Length: 348
Image (cartoon, rainbow, N blue to C red):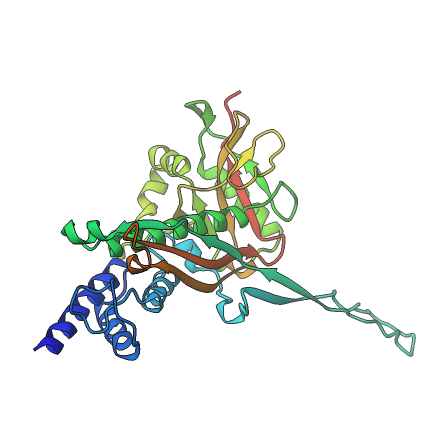
């Protein structure tokens, strides 16, 4: 009977933890019971009586990996980018830096042909490290609270890492400054709330620049900031009608772009059209942008994930559990091309 009760408690704990991380409950049940029997350690995370109870960092690391690999709804633009996870060995990816193209001769009559070398090189890209500060969970809380405090804390750690990961990704995929290969343009609509609103003409202009740069038409993405979404919905009836497909539940294409929304798009200096540094507080000269890119010129990769745990049984004076996570991830353009931005112009 005690064994059956222990298994039941493990199943409940595993199911709750998996659900909190967006994983199928059955995986949590299997993982917790599997580790319970394989591990000889006993103590504090599972409720009293659970089979070989313990915090089981490996289990929660597995849950965290699954949660971080699963793109949340509303981030379709991120899911379009090719994943290089399988190449992230020791949280570093090695790309081949192509040396150049061979010379093409037309109507050549001179022989022998001159031999030329195309020297390729190694380009190592280190993944960014994301880590959370430890969260304290006392045994008193676990005893008195009616909900699974540890599961909710782990969920919040996952959400905090994901939020930072995606905001850095959209910032990295935005042009550093205006150039022929990476156009940055200003909105041109009527003045509203101190800025010029975005119009369909602005999207058309960016499309023309992409066409001239021979950016692949298939899969082009336009990630609109909240201001620009509001501009188009309020002032462009055609965009409003195209914006959302009630039958499929998906946003329709507009002018060849797959349309997405993201509130944390980067800011640009409206005078220099240069992107401000990630994490900088926007100045009066800075305005938010919408970002366009071709997924064929972008990459993303997720590396290792590790759970750091200090259990209450190891802290007899404070009787508290500590938990934090560390993971590696990156999202970057493969080349400085096939991306652009539309920045809100300030009212003149």
